[in-house]
Length: 387
Image (tube, rainbow, N blue to C red; front, top):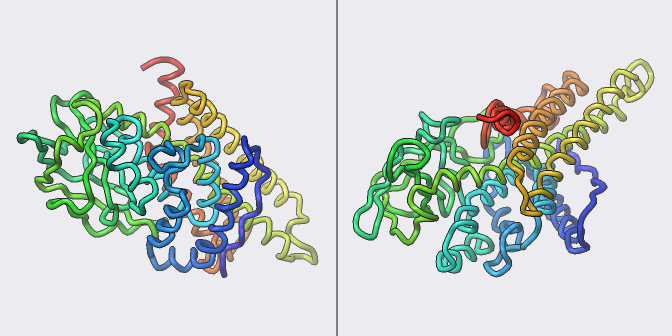
């Protein structure tokens, strides 16, 4: 059966422009994404035309400067856009978050010349980005990455393999972290690599439990030649850039997780009101009502947490600890809420005829991407008691 339209959320938005933006996103989501979401996820089809539409509507560069085609929206607003998209289809919400992550290094650390040359196409020119940090042997231990960039005149030759790359094989540009110096975090540099560069290729996409419409693949770089003009930041600054990007990216994952949880709650509430047992709707049974109440409370708490972290970011204050907390809490909430939704639907929840099982499979990956939740706990603890 088709997915239900997500119920509107009573949002506190800072401006009339932000309210209009959320309304636009809801309209696009319902007209262009929702009708085919279940079918396309089942078929493993990536909706590139949706991302083209979002780019044309100015929704792929929301938190970046208007000077380069961005929307110049605060993270407080941008994250709520992600939630709206993920509530309809996680492949789209997560894809926008990853594109924003891939654009971050240039937007935050690029020179004015680099930004003027590349950002307009990245933010509003229909391009789609990917972020390349993880490798087959370095996931959580990202500072041990082995991909190397060797200087040759005015160019760099990059060789290595990146793993678990969202949009791998279909991205128009890749933000690549490669080793240019000593072992450890100080020897890593960031590069902006065009997707059609000779020597860059992608493996067959991974066969995943969920999120099947979003391609995840290894990306191979075989002597990929990149001019020094595409180096982002200073030599050896790449790991600091990567971590800074991930602080913001984790907020994107948190917002997407609340979107998925919200979709699962809406499905559970609607089903409970319609399904009758023992002569009355199952929503009349206290045990089930308490489950729904707990699900709704966890979702509201998660949204409040990611918005609190976003407001710190918007104010220019430290937010890394709060970003880790938001990613941890919101993705764990998504897992709990989607599991409870399957339970409420009973046998139907375990079938592909209803979207609850898809939401549960999708929620699992959010506890893993952009730093596992065990890594988030390490980050939080480091802020509390030191390294």
